[in-house]
Image 1 (cartoon, one colour):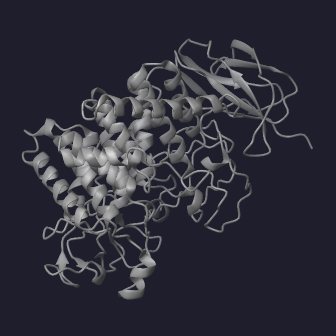
Image 2 (tube, rainbow, N blue to C red; image 1 turned 60 degrees about the vertical axis):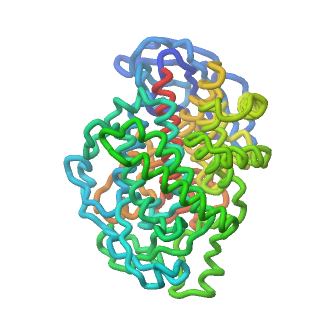
Length: 555
C-alpha cells in the first residue's frame, strides 16, 4: 500500500526574512510543490522537493520543501500533488510572539495557593488549592530547631508538572532559565504583557518568577541555611482539581543538590532584581543573603544525596511523589559558584568555578545544570581570566557547530533529532535547550547560522516533526488535547490549559500505555494517561520561553 503523503511544518508560520521549510513524508508522485494563497488559491511560488532522506530515528523517508524565497506577508498553504494541502500558516512579523506569551502565561495557570481570576485565567479560572500555610516537617527533615511535626508555612510557587507538588531541584533549572531569558533579552520582556495580575513597574516575566521565588525562600531552614528538597503530599493526588484534596503536606529532607540549586537561583535573582529595588525594596539583598547561607550549609554538607527509597526505609510516612534524586552534584557546585561569583565577586566562588570547569557535562536538564553556569559566565566575561573565558567560548561554539553540521543530514533538517539519544523523557525540552544553546552561540558571535538553527528547532516544536503535532497546547492547528495535567483533566473544559509544552516523543514509554507508533521520533501519544510523552512540566516550558522570546527579540 502506498504511503500517505503528509506535509509537516511550523503551524504558526515564518518570519519574512527567515528560513522557511516544510517536510514531506510518504511517496509524492511529483517532485514539484507549490505555495498558494489561502484566499483565492493563487500560486505565489513553485519549487522542487529535495532528494529523499531516510530518517535515522524512524522508518520515514522525507523530502524538503524550501520556500525561503517567499518574502511577502500573507497567509499560505503548501500544496503537493496527491496530498492534502498543509495547515495554513502566516508569513510576517512577530511570529514567535504568540508562543512566548502563551508559554510564559502557562506559569500563571500553575500557581499554587492562589485562586485564578476569570479576568486573567478566562475559562480556566478556578479556586485556590494547596494553600500550604500548614506544612509539616517530615521526620527526614527534622532538625534541632524544627523537630518532626513542626508546622511551617510554605505558600505560593508553581505546581511542578501535571501533579500538585513543588520541587526545589526542578524549580532551580526553571528559574535559572527564565531569569537568563530576562538577562539576555530584557528589552523584549520589559514590554511583554501576558495578562496576569500586574505588579507596578515589574515586567510580567519577573512578576511571575517572583511568585515562585518567594515560595523557594520559605524552603530554607532559617536555623542553618539548608534547603528542603520538596513540599509535597506523601502520595500523588488523584486526577482532581487543586483544592479538592486535603492530604497532609510535608517538607522533606534537606539535600546538597537542592541547596546548591537554591543558592544559584538566589544569587542570580539578587543580581536581576537589584534593577527593581524601588518597586521591591530589600528583595535583592534578601536573595543574596539566602544564597550565601545556602552555600555555607552546602560547604558543611557537601554530598547529602536525596535518596527517596532509602529515606522511606528509615522514616514514615513513606513519600512516593517525584524523587528528583541526583547522585552527581559537581554541576550544582559549578552553577552555584558561577552565579555567586558573578553577583559577589567572591574569590572562594571563583576558585570553585575554576576547579570544576573541566567536568564533563551536556545540555541542561534538572540533573545537569553545569551549562547554566557557562551561560552566566559568558554573559559576564570579566569574572574569569581571559584564558578560561576563551576555553568556555570555544567549547560552546564547538558543540553548537557540531549540532549544525549533523542537522544537514537529518531527515527533518533540524538540530533536534540528530541522534536517537534526543528522544528521552521530556524530549521536547531537549529541542528547546538545543535552541537556547544556539542562541547563546549567536550572542557570542553574531553569526546568523546559529539563529537559523534555533528557528529550525522552534519549527520542530510547532509542527515540523514526525508526529505532525504542534507540541504547545492551544497553539497551531493540531496541538495536544489530552495532556497529563490534572487541572486540564478535571476542569470539565474541552480545551486543555493553554501554553504548556508536552514532553514529546519518548520510545521508553514508561507509562505502559499502548502507542500506535513506537519508533524514537514517533513514540508520542496524546492521552492524559501517557505521562511519559504527554505530561507537562515547568522545566520544559522555561527553555521554550527563552527560545521563542529570543527569536522574537532577534527578529
